Amino acid sequence: MTRTSHLLDLPHHDGSSLHVPAGTPAAGDTVPVRVRVPKGSGVESVWLRTVRDGEPRVTSARSDGGTDSEDFYVAEVVVHNPVTPYRFLLDSPGGYRWLDGRGVHDRDVPDAGSFRLTTHAPAPAWLADGPVYQIFPDRFARSTAASSRPVPEWAAPAAWDDEPAGDGVLAGTQLYGGDLDGIVEHLDHLSALGVGTVYLTPVFPGRSNHRYDASTFDHVDPSLGGDAAYARLSQAVHARGMRLMGDITTNHTGEGHEWFARALAHPDSPEHTMYVWAPPGGPDVATTPDGTGYAAWLGFGSLPKLDWSAQETWRCMVTGDDAPITRYLREPFALDGWRVDVANMTGRWGSADRAHAVARELRAAVVGERADGALIAEHFHDATADLQGGGWHANMNYTGFTRPAWSWLAVDGSPAGAHGLPVGAARRPGGAMVATMREFDSAVPWSVTARQWNLLGSHDTPRLRTVVGSAGVEVAAALLFTYPGTPVVFAGDEVGATGDNGEHARTTMAWDQGARGGGPRWDAATMDVYRRLSALRRGSSALRDGGMRWAVVADDAVVFLRESPSERVLVVLARGPWEGAVLPHHLLAPGASPETLYGDVGLRLTADGIAVPGDGPGVGVHRLA
Picture 1 (cartoon, rainbow, N blue to C red):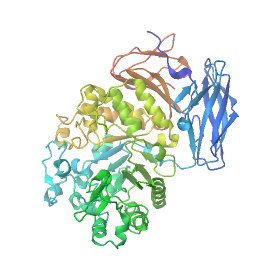
Picture 2 (cartoon, helix red, strand yellow; picture 1 turned 135 degrees about the vertical axis):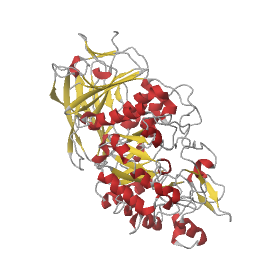
Picture 3 (cartoon, one colour; picture 1 turned 45 degrees about the vertical axis):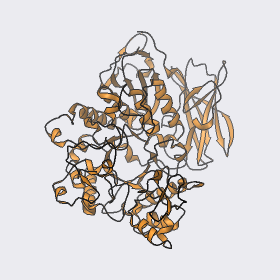
Picture 4 (tube, rainbow, N blue to C red; picture 1 turned 60 degrees about the vertical axis):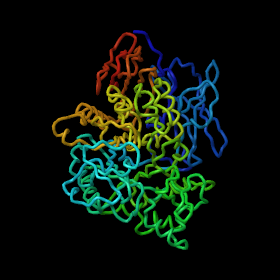
C-alpha cells in the first residue's frame, strides 16, 4: 500500500479535557493549556500568544513531559476578559509557525481562528446524553382523537399518505392532522433510537401548518390537542428519561396575533409599541390595507416583526408572570428549554442591533427559571459572532456542519439545491469540507462547538437521502454521530424519507409500513444504521465528549480521532474508493489491537503502522486505546 501523508505529524490542541482543564473559568483565573508536539515535527520551542484588553501578549510554554512519540508543553492563560483568545507560536529552524483552531500555518494569521476560553457557562450536560429528535407535529402521527377535531378554516385537509406540496399556497395550508397524543403513542420508536431530547416545532395556534405565525402564545393549538395534550406529552417524555424542548418565535408573531390586532386597532396602546413600524416601500416592509407600513420577516406581511426596544415586548415575552419564555418551562408543561426561530434577526432592524442583549436576557430568564435549561438559536448563516458566550448556548449548525457535509456527499444530479442559494448542490473534495468545518468551529469557544446542534437536514431543508443518495446515507449518519456536538435527527430521516426542498421534505411517518417491517416509505436497514450509531455514541466517552484530531483528509475519504482521558476512537469515512493510508503504531495502546465498534472498513497492523484500506463507500469506527 502506498503511504499517504497524514496530519498526525503536526502539533495539536483543542478545548477538550485532554488539553484544557474541565469546568468554566472565572475572571481572574489562570488556566493551564496543553499542546502536543510530535517528535520529528521540527519544533524547538513553543510560545503562547494571548490577547488581553485588545493587546497581544507572548509568554514561553514549558516542557511538560511526553511519550516516545510526542512532547507535551503547557502554558498559563490569564482569564482577564469574558472571552480570552489564544494560540501557539511554534519556533523551528525553518521559521516560526502558528497553531490555532484551523490548524498549523507557516504564515501570519488573523485572530478569528484562535482558541478561546470563556467565562460563560456551557450548554447543559444533558444535551450530550443522546440525539435530539426533531418533530414537525402535523406530520408525525395522528391519535384516534384527531379525526374528531374540526379543521381550521385556513387549512386544506390531506390524507396521511398524500405527497406534501413543495411550493405554492398549499405548502403552508396542507394539514395532515398529526397531534401531540399521536407522538405519545410512538415514543417507543424514539426510545429504540436512543433519543435524549425531543424537540417540537411550534405548537401555538397559527394560520399555517408550520405554526411559526402564532396568533397567541397563551395556549397550545386545539388542533394538536391543546394544553392538556402538551402536558401529557411532557409527562410521557420525561417518564422515559428524555428531555422536551419547545420552539418559539422571538423575531415576529403572526399577522393574526392578538397583540398585532390590538396594535393596529389602537395606535396608542402598549401593543403598538411592540412592533417595528416603517415607511411603506422600504426593504422587508409590508403594508396594511389602510397603508400603514410595518417591518416583516423577509417582507412577508403574515409575520410582523417585534420591537425589542419596547418594554411591553419584554413584559409580554419574557418578564411578565404569564410570559411564554418562562411559563412553559414550569409545570404542567415543564419544557427543558427553547429553540428560538430566526434568532439571527431578533432585535436587529436597520441601525438598531439588540440581538446580543436579547440573547443574554433570554438565557438569564431560561436558566433563572430552571438552572439546567437550554437555549438554542436558529441561525442559517454565519452565527459565530453571536456565539461568543452569555447568550445562545449553541446554534443549529447549518453552516459549520450541514452544508459542508452535503458538499462532500452530494450526488450529481440531485434535485436538491445548495440550501439558501440559487444554485445546485456542488460535490466538493474532503479537503473543502474539513476546511469549512474547522473554520466555523475555530471561531467559537470549544464549549459551544461541543454542544452545537449538528444536523443533516431539518423541516427547512431537502431530505438527506435526496441530497446524498442511498449510498451516502450511512456515511453521512456516521459523520453525524461521531463529530463533536449534539446530533439532531429530523423525524423520517432514520427511515429514508425523501424531499426536494423544505416544504416537500415535511413528509408523514409511514407507521403502517414500519409495523410490517418496512416498505417504500420505511427503510428498515436505514433505521438499523441510525439505531446502532446512536448506541455507539451513547456508549463512548470519546464520541460524546472527546477532542477532535484530523488524521487524513483526502478527496474521497476523511479519517479523524476522537480522544477522551479514557478512550481513543478512530473514525474512517469514505464516500468512494481512495488510496488508503498508514497511521503510526503509537496510536494503539502497547500490545493492543484495534477493536471494531462499527462498520465494514477494517484496519490491519503492518510493520509500517496501522493500515487503513481504500475501500469505499464505507465506514469504520475503531477503539484504539
